Image (cartoon, rainbow, N blue to C red; front, side, top):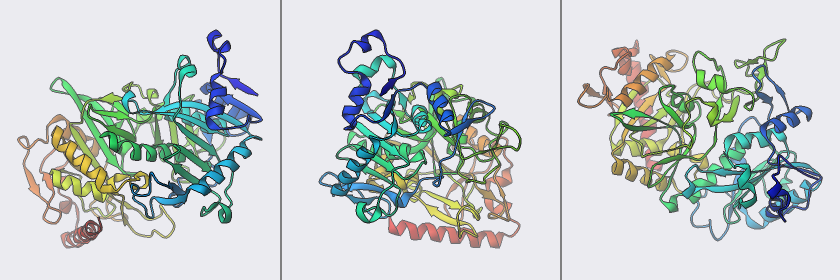
Amino acid sequence: MVIEQSQSFAQLISLNFPADNAIDFLQLAEPAELFFQLSPAALIEQAVQRGEGQLTDTGALMCSTGRFTGRSPKDRYIVRDELTADTVDWGSVNIPFSSDKFDRLHRRMRSFLEYQTVYVRYARAGADPAHQLNLCILTTSAWQNLFCHNMFLRVADEELNRFKPDFTVLAVPNFKAIPDEDGTRGENFAILNLSKRMLLIGGTGYAGEIKKGIFSALNYLLPPQNVLPMHCSANVGERGGKPDVALFFGLSGTGKTTLSADPDRALIGDDEHGWSETGVFNFEGGCYAKAIDLTREREPQIFDAIRYGAIVENTRFAPGNSTVDYSDTSLTENTRTSYPIDFISNARVPSVARHPNTIFFLTCDAFGVLPPIARLTPEQAMQYFLLGYTAKVAGTEMGVTEPQATFSACFGAAFMPLAPGTYAQMLGDKIREHDADVWLVNTGWTGGGYGVGKRISLTHTRALIRAALSGQLDLDQVRYQAHPIFGLAMPTACPNVPDALLDPCQTWADTAAYDEKATYLQRLFNEKRQLL
């Protein structure tokens, strides 16, 4: 049985309903029950009825993702075939998968779906019409279909009859692989077939696998179109009467989403963008923000976006009521919230803008030795982009008892099918062509490493970002000094920031200990550069 959200008279007399077209595109025999393009309200109602989630006191839908509360990078594969054999950067990140085994797994999934309730959605990835993917997404849970409604660009009802999908996603958490037969490492998998333009996900209920799978596809498909795919957030303000676009690159936990949510600037997007010959554009139609320790005081825009239509993942209620306790990490520290971008009051829709003026590389330095802000030369920018440095702190993963340096090339190596140098070269060319300023911003520790020093306050980081964007840190406005170990250009003054904070050495009680730890981190940088 096929149920659609709504059908106009023109749709009703059409020879092919959109849902029928979707079934044909997905190569499915008709399943037991199929819901096509349901509204958020209908999906929320079904999710609650099916026991997939509960409503919070703000109206958001609270769901658990099951065993997997994050992505599983070691279970992400790319099909190796004639198209990808010599183009994908194969290794521990991009793990090859047999084309024959993919086809076998796909057939088994299709057979499995004949006995399931499925939810099908048309959506898009890419706010620039010149560089879009038309998606046909199938999920077996209502809440994951709502996630896709939130996170991808939405297709208007009047477009459904003429919509032509060119990429398929099957997300089926209750379908498990048979490792010995299917060639997977375990029962869970996320397999990208770039030749057939398909993404198969099974054995995991973590919805982020859907979003990042499509991001990986775009990271492969767009560079030949001279579009640089970027793991960054973006916003736009005004400077000198002209649009002022900023990009924020960073790995998880560095402040990418938080710092781009600025009430004085329009949000373009919080995570994935492309930089084309005409400017930047969001790949997504929503935001997927970390929710751990979320408060209205610290992040008012994100907090207020968590309302009816939004999703909160792996959170828990405060005892005795339906208010979310964002400090509760009993399931995971990777608690998340998903909502359409227009839930942010000053979001820019459509999410496109001109070329960026300013680029920030965000790093959470748990060693406490990098300056809170430093101006980078184009050459330094390429080095730090390829390094993609941040640090894990004790307690975030099993076995991590002290800060550990983490490197992810291009601030998103886990999603980059091509060699890192391809993306770095494109970024360098665009920085030079459009004369963009590049800054390294440490959102981590000062006055000592994790456990000794303290986290740089969000208030000070926001002040530094604001000063860089407004021109108050321009070379003709403030004096700079070179860091003796890293060679970074550090401003000596910034409005609303203590001068001593700007030079990290001054914040340590023991300068010899600082020099030792900074030298250690620089040695790690040099060792990593030799491997690139």
